[in-house]
Length: 461
Image 1 (cartoon, helix red, strand yellow):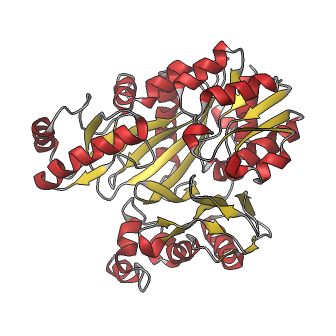
Image 2: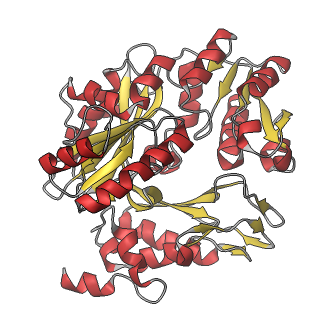
């Protein structure tokens, strides 16, 4: 086991990793920007190193500064968390060349699954279903129009190297496709340094289902069941639940087997997530793999009792999975997570940084809150707007919803605007309560925000 780990991240995920390390008896080193000097992860770690000013390019994405901090503090390994450098194959290679273990998959696996077009081709070859679309980057508008005509509208443009909703555009006709193509390419270049985009058939009334994977270096690979991530804004997840209300045990086994097959196709190790779209007829299609721990990993931990971060550390240290047989993976109850972001839902989810004056965290049975915020904390404009993740666990979905509703009523974050109000609206929706949720749920809900929800549409179904 490692004696000391550097946490190459900030916010709640940095705290999550530090806490796991402390329980395992592993010392930690926090890195921080000048703007994060007073952040909780800095004083909860055993050591802390400032790596630069606030902008991410000069701090949390500054590879030389991070490696220098790791060498100065003599760490054995680096945990990247999620975001920032977590899916950067070059960073993983540099860690290994400096004899520092990267707590994540091998660089070649990150590259294989990081290019979405290459990933689709890789899993298709082993029998995993994929969405109709291009297998190479689209060159120009003429090629785009030809492809869209063949697979039929609506289509979606996606960044080949991207994620988080950036470089994505849904197009229902030729005019929209032509105008969106250049915008998506420009956005992809700015966000990922790669302007390549591809086109897929856009599945309306689809669900976003992902399977949590764990794989060690001894040939053991299991999944920890699925999460339903259909409730999104701008292609970014807002609320997740495990298990999915739309997946029964027969479908769960079929999708889970395919997820494991996809991971094995690239000899994957450590934690990762295989993501699918599920249509109304029960057909599912691979869309991508995230080669890191997910924001929403906590709800999987609640229904399985498996600590995914600790598993990541053990796997990187060369140990075997704590549970190596699929039929031995525990499964109990239901969990739902709300991402609490400093955003204004009534203003197209515009970021709302600022100082938190009043903060009251919910608690009680069935509640888990992963957050780095507190009264007096300032949400900074330089980084992601997420304040924390509120999770509720119950013996069944109905109980989990009740716990979550009660928790949201207790949660106070003022005076900045947050996503707490829209989560309350989501939970009140009859469609949500019946599990009739698709990836377009939030756009439809916000069509009349904040005066109405989906009650009228629910009456028609």
